[in-house]
Image (cartoon, rainbow, N blue to C red):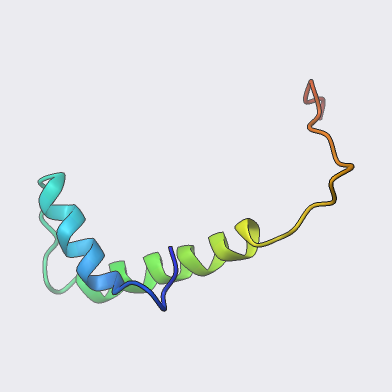
Length: 62
């Protein structure tokens, strides 16, 4: 989700209609702020380039 290409508030309003979720107008600024932050964090992850030599671990062992 790229902030430059999308209006976050409009996205929230349209999505909430689709899933039948009522968001009180007083809470909308907080929802917009949180989704904006989430989008910024997601951009850091999705735009991080990995070398071609990296392979996924077959088993996760903490």
